[in-house]
Amino acid sequence: MLVTARAPEGAEWCLTWNHSVTGGHVADCFVNREGRMILARSYLHDFSAGLGEVEGRGGRLVSAPGGGYWLEDIDDAIEGNALPVRIGRPSTDHRLSVGGRQHRLSPRAVGQRVHLVLTPE
Image 1 (spheres, one colour):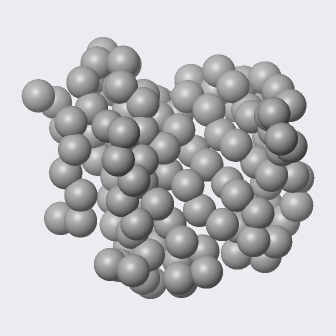
Image 2 (cartoon, rainbow, N blue to C red):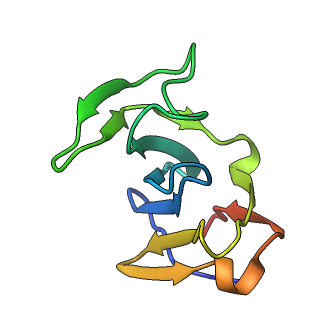
């Protein structure tokens, strides 16, 4: 267990990292909606290598202050309330922000597959 944090109804948490090709900032933000883990929005610094809208997925594109784009209102339920993530090398610097705290994952689990899990209270 790398991180345990409370995420009550309506709480948001974000997984952020540096794109492995461009080094630009990327984020996926989730919310607890009625005990379900929902991908609510994503931040993209640009539309390079593998970034952009996913065909068939909801959401709307909004310019972000200071550059980049937010895909808002995605509202995509995460199956089983668990998202597998391969933690990247130190330059990728995976971070989890929840409850006003940021947890750096790369120094603790580089190269490992971890799961972000929302468990009911």
